[in-house]
Length: 127
Image 1 (cartoon, rainbow, N blue to C red):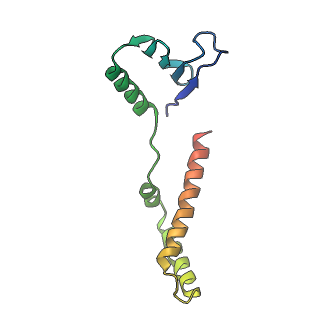
Image 2: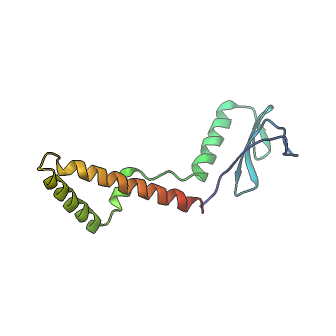
Image 3: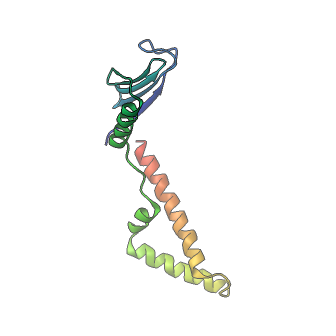
């Protein structure tokens, strides 16, 4: 997996002015730079705004991985876990005397499972 390093220029950087934004691909190769002169792609000045936008979008698409959707994550849930969530939801609904439908408990359980999955993905990505 490619890593995108996004650097805001500071006065501590010797090779670029203080007010610049750099996009690097692992981890030191500068690919894009925005500074007071304009947009630079692989150390070439790009004067055309449309071309600059196209290059930036292309770079970001190649170097970033989209987050999975909730539906994609739920599809990965093992069948046994789905069955257990359904059973627990039914038990909780019964415990409320049927005042709360099992579907509401299932939504809560799915939400917690999704939050956990996203936390795991975030931690995994930062390793």
